[in-house]
Image (cartoon, one colour):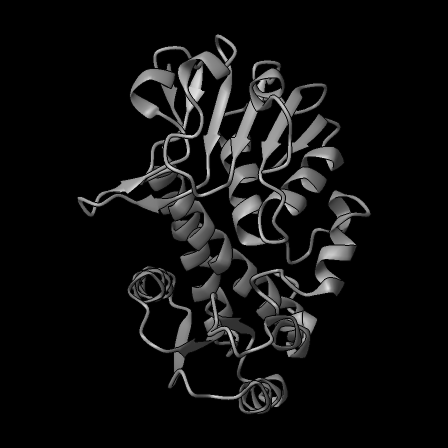
Length: 286
């Protein structure tokens, strides 16, 4: 069994991005990420901190705008429009989830697609369905999975891939990106009958549900590549993935740990998208 070490791969990506940012700064281009945070949800604060640390490592400027949970949809949209118009800002990130009274689709729609470094707008999601050539600002978690597979030289073309989870943030865009690379993709979700029948066929199994230990050893094909994307916090405070790592790792050919697998890759790809957006917005060719 080979561990797919997202922490190691993400550090290498951040190192490469840091040299690109240094070169851009010489040409007076300062990549900048603007982050909107509503409330003080502990999970959101933890994610924000990791993103801020990655910005510090790469030299990307960080500006954070904190709002109380009483903020309205219109107030958030007004701030996004202000950031859309600010030429010094290259990436806009709204930390999700937002409070229930905020209509999240309208918030995402307000972001200029050229600054949508999360890859959540309909424009960027739609482009991604065309081919790999149009994956300009792809959703960060699916992109992180692809980068991990590329790093470990895992062949996607012709592989039988099962994606468990069909969210707009992970499952659907990941399925599209794998199809772009000529995999045969099955998407499963909460209404799928006989989940194990599908997962046992998978050469590459990607799970993004957020249900601890959903995937057990008997559901995995021997030698399969297992990508555990889901994260949940156990009563003892520890993080758990969707895969029973202790037992599945004995059977898998490759497997990601939680934490230290896809999570750091998501953050690294957010930085990659921010640098990409800064280059495009400034017509920077180097």
